[in-house]
Length: 119
Length: 210
Image 1 (cartoon, rainbow over the protein chains, first blue to last red):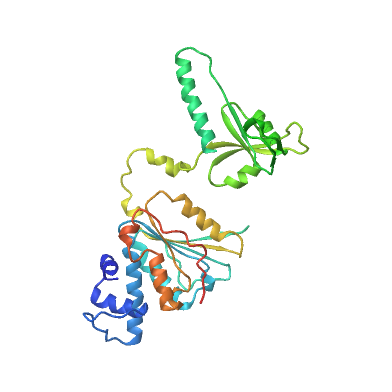
Image 2: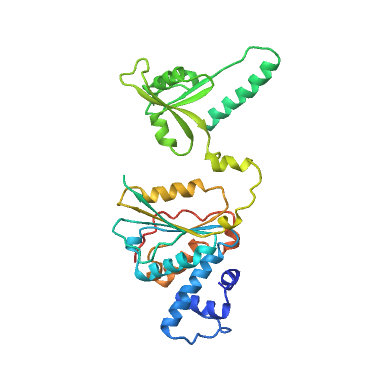
């Protein structure tokens, strides 16, 4: 995990405790628990996950595929929104699909496109 | 079908040599059909085959243009998307009640479309900024209209360009921690370096819910 997070350019002192807790992995002794308010911890976790995913796009372009956004939970949509908003400068293609009833909770940007399939 | 295309290619090469030495050129026609058949006793040419299938294949072969490989719609259904074909419309074939849709096989897999063919062209210069920009595409459509298929087709088409392919569960944040861990490792987040230049397997629909 350290290697993976490190190669994504993340600061291990923050990223390792966040991701260890997220994945329910024991935290090695050489790391300290983070003293953060739950909401701040949550924000930092999302930012860390996004950075981790962006890290993979440095050696080569990455396509992140999320299907059926109409079934996505609010937290995952929040993470996707972070990928959308901060991914503009990374060679990353976020490819999503949804049924027509899905209303994106984020505004459309210049680098976003929508494609409707009508039969 | 690959073998047939190779045979046609080899014949072209042979004809080039024949032409140089002023000898007559050879041509060939290949017809492929698929269907049920019952094979009786015997082997090789001695085997008795009871079916319309070989007859159809023989008729397709006679209908084929010289130096080409023709297939029926039954074969096309099996290889659809794997080979580039030209529609040659329905043909009335001798001895068959209804017309048979035929296709000419143009290219094997591997050389797909202009983008792939363009790899043999001049080195790519400039547009670094455009290449490095992030993009997002949302495909909207009713259930069953082919959204997943479209995404998979896209994956197939970019197959040979180095990229990472990360199918992320749409309920990632709500998964149990052990499932999150599996999701991270399925997406190659643990070992990016080993995944470089390849794509992780297409995991099918990612609408796994807990």
